[in-house]
Image (tube, rainbow, N blue to C red; front, side):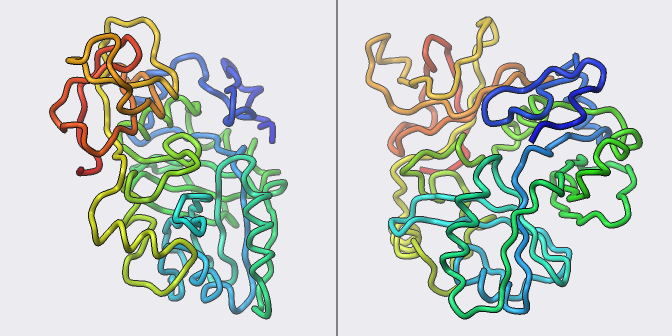
Length: 321
């Protein structure tokens, strides 16, 4: 979905999975500072939007998702995962129920596969699943924002701010009243600072929730059976996920950020040292400088100095080994 806000002054289109919205509007650090101060908004209208309606919707979703949603109150935001039979992460859903419909926004382009799976699991349940991406757009307001919420918008409020699901036809007019726009690069830099994982960035085909700290926020350990639960329970009880998420402070003297997939080694091992992990997301932060999230092997010492490609990096623990 190509956003009409790409016509705003200074808008530079994003690339890759975030294609369709602005990477920035001419001043990356100013946009980050505005979001950190609770002003402005982020256009996330490229994200997929899925709606589940019907009187059985919450009980049915409860059987499929990693999160406890059978009694989800209207207006309460939560997030959930769908796992493979082996416990690997396949989908991440950012949910809110409005009393008649459960809404989820998901990674761009993943809504088709998600809906196909949900449709295959309907059986006799009274539920309807719909792709609403074409007519509903997602807009993010940062924590502390006093911007008005338009009438008819569905609001998903979290500690990081509010996600608005509003008619796509109203996106351009709402942007004119919501304050200065911030691009996806500013949003991503703050996500890295907050160590929040993102599907397709911090995940690969074998990622399990424990590696990313999604236990608790997206996985409920006391709910009933769902696909992949055996892996979740086994790793939780043994306490040994094979990898762990770390936050990296990168050497600021380097001109280029290490791109996702860049190998990580222990600095003591020298340039020919074995790979112990890889960069998942890197960003330039308005206060912290160049930073990144990375997955490293569980047995990497928490105080080890690392090298990402050719860039020295100091780690902070996100997921305990």
